[in-house]
Amino acid sequence: MAVPKIVLFYKFTPLPDPEAIRLWQHTLASSLGLTGRILISEHGINGTVGGDIADVKKYVRGLRGYAAFEDTDVKWSDGTGDDFPRLSVKVRPEIVTFGVPDEVKVDEHGIVDGGTHLSPHGVHELVAERGDEVVFFDGRNRFEAQIGRFRDAIVPEVATTRDFVAELDSGRYDHLKGRPVVTYCTGGVRCEVLSALMRNRGFEEVYQLDGGIVRYGETFGDEGLWEGSLYVFDGRMNVEFSDETTVIGRCALCGTPTSRYRNHPDVRGRELTLVCEGCVPDPVEV
Image 1 (cartoon, rainbow, N blue to C red):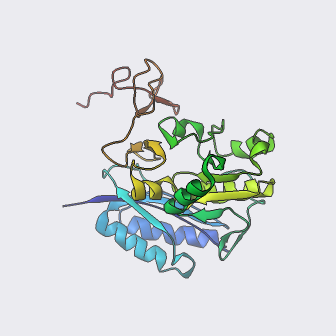
Image 2: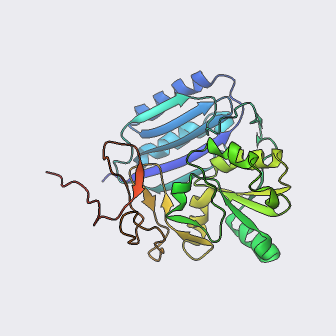
């Protein structure tokens, strides 16, 4: 019986020939029948792929067989078997599109001058030591935070990752520059860059949640500082970390608690809206 799994991974490391990596990655993933998205640049690789567990395991072994990727942190989760429409492997100027490829510096150890990595337990230790002085800073697009975020987190007004640079340069968060700031995002990759951008702009004590919300949820479920569901960029749309998840999202039409995103009002459009099933039911399959 097929057991669908999804893996989320990234690795910042210099890649002199991204196109060669793209060809290899496409051959590897497609030969195993996997689907998903893989981005490659001179800064490294960032991917989410899914398929049967046996094939995904072979893919991960192949990925780590390349010396530059041998210690890549891979996060596993349950899939549905229909999480991605196809396989996409592309070369881009950045593996996370902040729009500042020349500002991102990478060496064999990863991002240069990024934030200090904290494990989920390390985050709790920091909060226990520094209390309300600690600031959680959401490194995702604002709509993702509608259904889940760290308690009392700052959620910037950004619609895309590109918006973060202007948001940081606006001076809106300058009052945080002397406080301990913990950045967080889905799997950690966005915070690798975001924390470096913040340090470049004078934030003195910047941390990043190692492994992102995914790793934090694996560690603490809904018993920690996280509240709600996690938005994910695949057919699942959102995941919960336990049966005790609090629903913090609200339907944009009626206000009913929900964590359900759908294209609305135009189902052919690209605008995701938080709507309950009562207001926007799924089409009935014939």
